[in-house]
Length: 208
Length: 375
Image 1 (cartoon, one colour):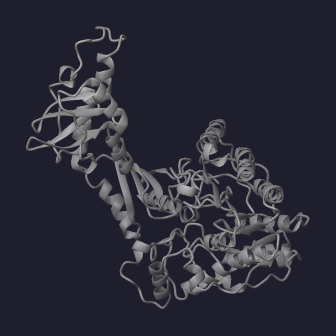
Image 2 (cartoon, chains in turn green, yellow; image 1 turned 120 degrees about the horizontal axis):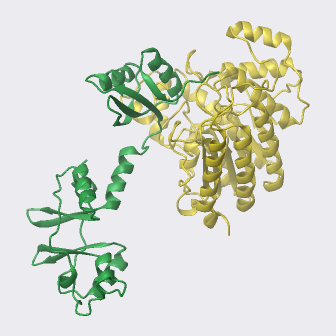
Image 3 (cartoon, rainbow over the protein chains, first blue to last red; image 1 turned 90 degrees about the vertical axis):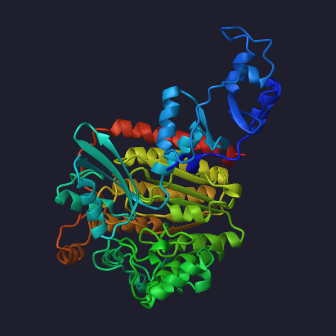
């Protein structure tokens, strides 16, 4: 999944000469929190609802900034950006490490989109969500070549279709695979998998 | 009034498939052995047009072709020809016979009948454009649509262990259909949907209710949330009729799921549903069967339903002859009483946590739908 698959466009922007009042009203009107600042077609900064509230608040430890009336005076100038072909996980890593809420997306200097934390949550929902009627299998696999192939091969042999597959490391030597399969009979599959030596975590074996 | 015909058993995916017509054979023979079987009403099969009241032309065309042995290459896209819902000769008619039974129940209700028990159907996974999870055509939705077109408000209660997704999606935007499904959480079980936040859209907003329950939920916790939720929702919705999908696969013996209801809970559920029909739906109620894959558990649960439905006293034991015949045929012992033995399954260590989580889920659900349902 790439940034271009999750980004929003077109992007709402303001110019550096916009007043803070107008910019804030614009944010409220559009129900958004981030505004890239564009001058002569180029991205020159970014301003957020938090920047505006801080700049105008008595609660700001530095005090309100009475002289600050234009976006250009308050915006962040060093903007961290993404490219449409960046992987989503890379965008997430950058946002997490810098603790920032969005990345304007630039292609050849032109602003072509924006990715926010909300878009990354949407991506997570798409990755883990249930898009087809399906049952869930969870299998702990040894972390070595061919184990996932053994699992998917087993399912393929039985004509079971995999709708989604998520895997993540578990401890040092194992990988947990969460598989959504197009069958109501996951208990029977689990039994067959156990007979083949797989460590099936869900569905559980019934003691009666 | 009971609706049934022998041809229901034509809906047969093969000897190893869990949705087995043997269940019907066992129930009818048990009711006869108990001396309580009364001649049921034999319904006509549903027509193609009636099926098309809730399904797409292209799905129906593919089912019809598969029935004749002609296989469209894109069958799987329509949920057909899969491990769960394989195709078989004559499947279109077999499915239409089941639809016909539930639809006949709807007609009888419209003609003034109060209580109808359809001894078949309950194919709640079938969707507008696809077969799914053992379900080819959605008999419940065909019956519900027949009644809403006649001006009735319909409350659908689904106690099958799987989410009643087909019925929910088909009526998702309809204000005159309340759907209410209690099931094992989709996080763990097929079909994966049925979260509390699926609450309907448009005119249907707040009229689609889902109570996903924790695996290993037992009688007490199930009944606690059921008795809190169902009358509350029915009172707010004021239906003209109740349609109940009485799947028996939340029983602890079920091999495909993980809830732990005993026949005691089912007896109580059936009595409550009849009470609710009296209190909130003018006494009108249409029961269908549904899932249920432990022959032993399922047959006893639906035999209980038949007795409670007719107000019959419950037999102390199942007839010896019937037990001997079926134990020989199945090659395994059967529970000799309608109810389950005490301490049928080992104690569940996480019981308290499960009860707490189910209460929390109920609370979330009521908070989500209350603003739309109560006015």
